[in-house]
Amino acid sequence: MDRFNQTSPVVGFILLGLSAHPRLEKTFFVLILSMYLVILLGNGVLILVTILDSHLHTPMYFFLGNLSFLDICYTTSSVPLILDSFLTPRKTISFSACFGQMFLSFAMGATECVLLGMMAFDRYVAICNPLRYSVVMNKAIYIPMAAGSWAAGITNSVVQTSQAMRLPFCGDNVINHFTCEILAVLKLACADISMNVISMVVANVIFLGVPVLFIFVSYVFIIATILRIPSAEGKKKAFSTCSAHLTVVVVFYGTILFMYGKPKSKDPLGEDKQDLSDKLTSLFYGVVTPMLNPIIYSLRNKDVKAA
Image (cartoon, rainbow, N blue to C red; front, top):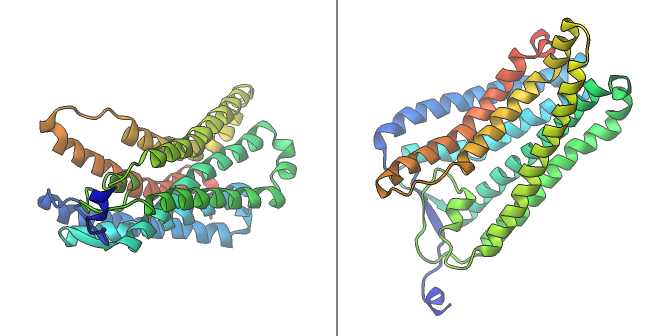
């Protein structure tokens, strides 16, 4: 502890971004900016459509509107910072701004995990219990479900961010990332982070494991119900009502599993390549997935097309 007390505390951080690959920065600036504009336009149009078209005032499209708003918030919490890092080598960010951005990103990510689980339940009731759908999924049920998703995500973010903020940062202040990603920030702490790691593992089980299990079980019942439908047309119609959600789930969780589940390279010569790969995968998760959501729902949903 004496060593920590003798060292000046960190008052800000430096974001490396792609500063080690300057040739890629301009290309990715144009690419990410274009994607961000598509995210704002696509998700903004979906929100307006679900609000203005009375035929879309159903639980499914209420959840979809929440998902679109969430994607706009999530990308807005990080993309401007990413774009700025492409233009400013070794971008500096204050301590408070760093943890503010971390809080928003964490809250939106956790909320989306829970919200996708809620949307799976909506599809389960619609296909497996269609006659009771209007009774089970009424406003008194689906509005609190969406609100609960937001509350759970925000609460988790408060816990994780506040724990990280209490850590002493007194040495290296260079974050090897585009944004204040929590794992990259924790590496800079000059104190024991075991409690932070345990807390994140518990949160991952709750916000990743439980929703994935819930979605998997829901779709087992959904697929079993669809297979019992006698006509091919009936099967196709039933599957079309949940195919968009299933596609979004596969893209969202598939990217997370790829990003955090792949083995780390033990070859020192391959660390730079893996570091670049990790950053680009993080970009895909943070930008490409929210961009695909409105496209998927527009292409695979005839109600949205009609609206």
